[in-house]
Image (tube, rainbow, N blue to C red):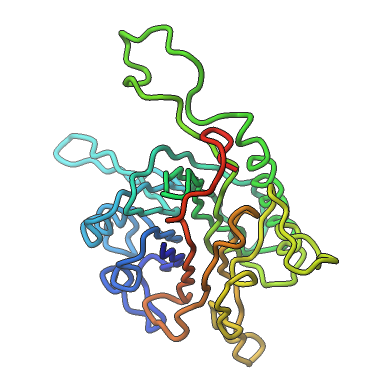
Amino acid sequence: MKLVSYNIQYGFGGDGRYDLARAARVVAGADIIALQEVERHWRRTNLDDQPEILSRLLPDYHWVYGPAFDMDASESRDGRVVNRRRQFGTMVLSKLPIVWSRLHALPMRRTVRPLNTRNAALECMIRTPAGPVRVFSLHLAHIAAEERLEQIDYLLDEHRRAVSEGGPWSGADDEPSREWTHGEPEPENPLAAIWMGDFNMEPGSAEYRRIVGGTPYHRGAAYRDGFVDAAAFAAEPAADFHTHEKIIDGRLAKRRLDHCFVGGMLADRVRSASADIGEIASDHFPVRVDIDLETPGLTGRHGGG
């Protein structure tokens, strides 16, 4: 299956032009798409409802949007309130149905300067032919490693509790007439997970090591309940790639800030990982991962590991 993660910078390209359709064309065709910096009802983007527009531009997908930033943007019109929310967050689109989703508001440190905003991770459970997998589109803090480490620790704690917590509901329905379950079996909350997004960290950083661990004695080791960098486990490794370019101290810095981390049980299923270097639909470059989620093999309907 083809996965792509893309920070679309709310539709503004590297050339400064606002063109949401251009960003949609970049990701079209992938099986699972994780987008960051998607917004609703901001003046800078014509008060557009970007999730709705993207859903029309990519009509073959199921989708979920998760706002990390939510502010009142309502107005009075002809004496009536027009309710509207100004939002900024992440999105997941999938050719397979998204069984359930939830939004994680990540820890945030209050700043004096510069501006800091709330970050979030959108979690979506998708039943693939290989088994159920929890797919995340996330965006970590851009200011400091300390804040990102707190956010990663939160996500790792949530990850390790997944199987024991269960999904959005559990247990036998003792009020079937109220249709709480719609007659469906308890939904899975598997250990198998994929994290994609803008992590605002580079390989080798403290935050990166918090996710994948230090260099193991056995190279290629993968803990079942931990994560590995898809790029490091690709059967067809791409040349060293970067996902963001910025002038820092007068020099062009090329950095890999966007990543795909897969659960240890998925490590050997990664086939390739790369970035579309030079794509100008955003200030980031999209990350593409080819992973075998077609071959059955993930164990346990509820364990999912």
